[in-house]
Image 1: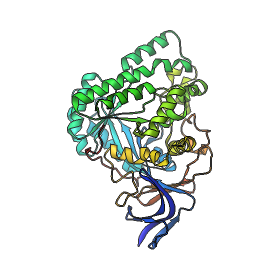
Image 2: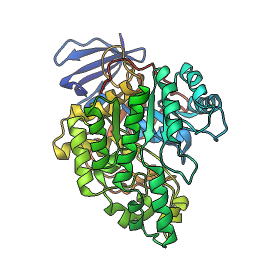
Image 3: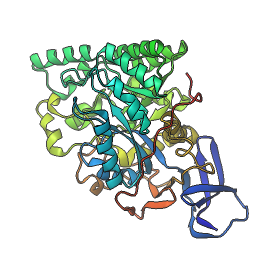
Image 4: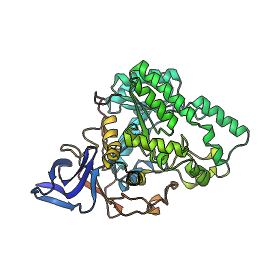
Length: 452
């Protein structure tokens, strides 16, 4: 007997769309049944009806500044995210073992969905030597910043190479925030000195060329160290072109973008001010189009939310000085609906989008075949979502965070039911899972299935 049967739905994954049913036993996908097949008995049956059935979303790029891991995970469940990979960092002198231990405990205590982490590396001589111990605990993705010089986060080119060699030795991957920190810092200081502090003064301090230059540097580091790299939040046509040039010469370089770079442009900063201050900044409509095409063709590999929320008080510091506002906007609950709506409106095949938001990030970061698929043996992470009703998000969801500029946009594709490892965690407009019911998913060493 099955524990759960999801009956007669339109099942979509990264490979295609079929009509059928899914059987779940012990928290795993036990079988898939063709439409019209005789179905076994089940303790619980969900009639999919007019809903689409897809793998749970894997969000590869998350910050939880505002809500903490527990609060973020509640928003994730609402949006159909069943596994997230959060960016974690400690103080510069804190050992990586301590950083990892703290966040794993928080995840075990608080999260309602499954989780893993990317470990942020500070530029210290002893840090590369700590990478092997972190990998032994199941963490093989490490984040480096080539930006934020004035905030003390920018790493040197020497450290980038040392860290990437150590990451390569453990079968890991380097994630890089690719903006030329020296160039950006100089442009920002010049703007501040000249009193240019309006919303429209922000983007010129982080031009697309800064992104392209940094991506070229990362590509060379990949060639020298053998370590594959993943460029987070590619925002511009220039940055995308740099990625493609590297790939053309055989460099193992992977690219992520985010819904905000496809759905919004620099007009949002002028009209919504600090609410839309992110880094890299929102770009021109031509960049939007280029990134959308890259998602549709697979040149962009994954889509991450880059969820990073702050309260109104923090964001409102930028009302009179855009540079005083913290970077980031929330995105977890609308991550899937926003991109599904975009795909429907632009004729993008649904399996292409599902692959970029489930299978690709799971494989990229060593979570497959457990995550990102509806094949037998995988964790039973499933979303059932509405394909017809357009509505904006319920604003009570954003009670404790600064709303996104997309908060009033009507989207379709809202999850009706979110299932994590065979347990319903969201249904009927509310999160039903207990705090701490999510589990840590360790990252396996990278295999040969991903090559440039």
